[in-house]
Amino acid sequence: MKKFLIIGITIIMFFFKNQVSADYEKVFFDFKIDSISGEEINLNEYRNKVILLVNTASYCGFTKQYDNLQNLWDKYKLDGLIVLGIPSNSFNQEKKENKEVKEFCEVNFNINFPMSAITEVKGDNAHEIFKWAKQNHGKSAVPKWNFHKILINKDGKIANTYSSFTSPTSDKIISKIEKLLKI
Image (cartoon, rainbow, N blue to C red; front, top):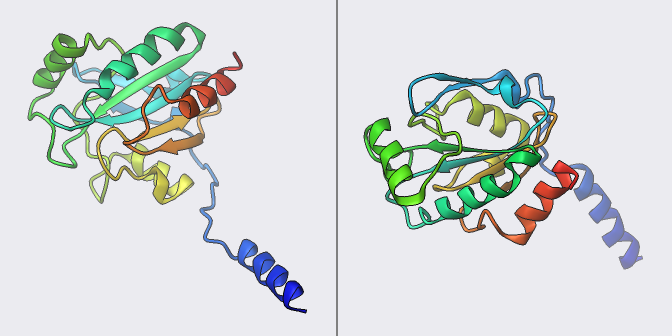
């Protein structure tokens, strides 16, 4: 009897688990964002690509992840991966001007993957991409710190999210990227 009660409770908990409804009225490719150089990035240009969206910051303990992000970009860009850096001062660890961030990334890390202008990534002032991510994937899509990663599949939907502590070149990120790229 006790065994059936435990099984019953487990089944009920499964059905009432707090899940986010991923209706995807819009997909990632429906958005635009300003680039670090001032032009507009129409994300529709990345359609049918896999995107690793990362909020970045120049003064963060995780800033060394720029090296790994660049390595991912170099290794997989011809296979269809886009690494998109989103500099953000949401955690008070970013430079004040886009020009300063761009120079910092180029001089210290030889960054040449696409980067946006300095952008809010959480709260009421978050860019619509991050509001969309939260709406469709839940709280795990909301950056809790710099270098939070959101992996977008070729359909423009969120495949997974990764915390700041997860290296961009970790086995779990690379295996997921390769699966999505089908390589």
